[in-house]
Each structure stands twice: as structure tokens, then as C-alpha cells.
Length: 124
Image (cartoon, rainbow, N blue to C red; front, side, top):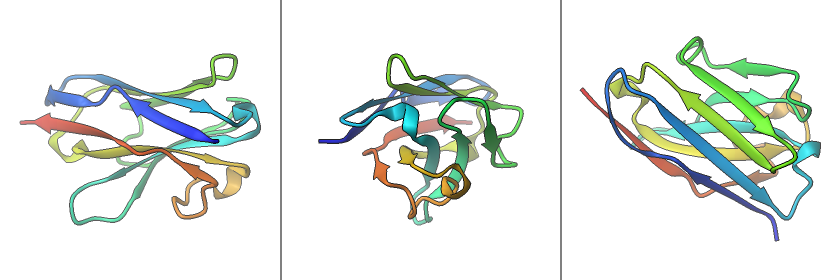
């Protein structure tokens, strides 16, 4: 059974940092591009960042570029999202996804697997 489990969310003041983790099981994570998406109340899932299966390629939404860093440790089946200089508009539920194809990994609906999400709240 494939599972993606996010952790590391919480409440932080504006300007602070959080590190999200995504633990994968039941799949060979090194075969998958991994993505992070977020969903604020009343909004659709929005792309945040993606990393290729090897970790050699990354891509970010303009809204987080320079503040967030995606990384992975295939030996540990883990994906991370380091979030710095957080803003109130970063408040959302953050989801981890796995996609066999890097070129389509910026689409939430096209993912092969999804996690349940972790809440991030940034206070002003």
C-alpha cells in the first residue's frame, strides 16, 4: 500500500521558518518526481515546488521562489520543503505528491499519489 505522510506543519509568526517532511512508503520513491502543493480555504490546490526523481532538477512557483527549498533523500524515502521568510499568505494545507513524470508533476490532479496534508498557519 502506497502512503505519503506529511509532517512538520504548525503555527509560526510572519518571517519565521518551517520545514515540512514527506515520508513515502510502498513505492520506490527514486522513480518518482515529488511535488508540494498547497490549498487555502475556498481555493484549489496550487503548485508550490517539484523535484525530479534524482533530485537534480527543481522548479518553484514564483510566489515562493527564493524563500522555499525542496529537497529529497532517496535513501530515506523522504522529501522536504524548507520554508523561510513565511508570510500570512502562505497559510494553507500543504500536500505532498508523487508523479512518475517530472514534466507533469506541476499538476496536482495528474499525480499518481497524494498525501493527506499538513496545516501551515502564518500569523501576522
